Length: 463
Ligand code: CA
Image 1 (cartoon, rainbow, N blue to C red):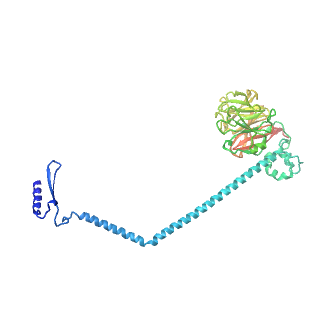
Image 2 (cartoon, helix red, strand yellow):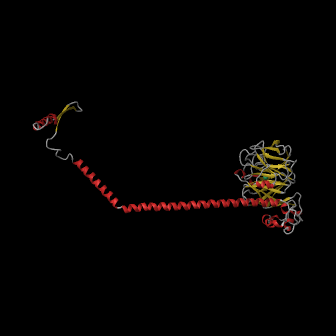
């Protein structure tokens, strides 16, 4: 076969030999993949510019199709140029949108400015309201030497110790009517008018706001005044406060009086030697008594010398969440003072979670005597002592709750009672009694409040 091809090519060469230029013919020799030698002659045609047949047709077809495509593109381009009106409308539409967008943005900015202005006004009004509230409160606490005229019937019904009702200046009548309206539950029944001695809890008044904490650390805490201050450093007007949010609570704030307390200006900040646990601390006879963090250790901190005076474990007392009040917050050990001394309110495993009351030696912190009640500590919100009697608060969140239980250490008998009590701010973390002021002090959801209370002879002897 290769020989046939060779002769065919050779004859072609021979046929065209006379008119072929020697330079137009070339011989090419190469091996195929099997190693056989191949000879190839290449000769250009003298007449035909291209080979006859269909070898160029696919290329031509491709060129034609590309031309057609180009024509189509050119037609579309021309049509686009001719349709200039449509393009202009698109530009106009874009301008319109831009204008609308600018307008909306402008209106939004204006609204933003209005909102900021209104916010400033609200803040200013809030500030004015706070100032007026504080002013009203300070006015209430300042006794006035004016003779009493109208409104005396209210004053006559108040305990002698409540100076809020000792002013009758006409200029203050309107404010007095607003801020010192006596709730019906507060009026003293006949027979207990002048009762100032120890007695059973008859009623609790509405909470009176003294200060609202201004940071998250004031969510809960304790605040009190010393009912029996010692020495010249501090008086029964001094207000003590501990914000107990946090893990290392050591700051004890001292305020000169209730007015400075309401304004938020402490006169001193004492740093305690050991961290405080929860809201159960109390102030009594010139000392701060508190539970050391994560322990059953009680500490007496002397306020005048600013030093640790004594420390002692409260035997078997649950701590750090073993026997808290229903609020939780590690309220395992609650210290309280009343007319009869210093008390610890807590529970033990032996008491199976029931409230245990111990009378403490205020110097050494030793337990002098204990009582076991039959009310579970974690079913009540808080507790306080008045005249040697324990009282428990049913709920720390319900607005209208009750003092629901009383235990008398004189008779070692407890019983259910119903004395209305208000959690105005729905998160009452501390309630304690001050027998000098004859008020309850409480810390209710950033709000430091007091409640007037009324004591009386037992109902069967109140005639
Ligand atoms: Ca308490």
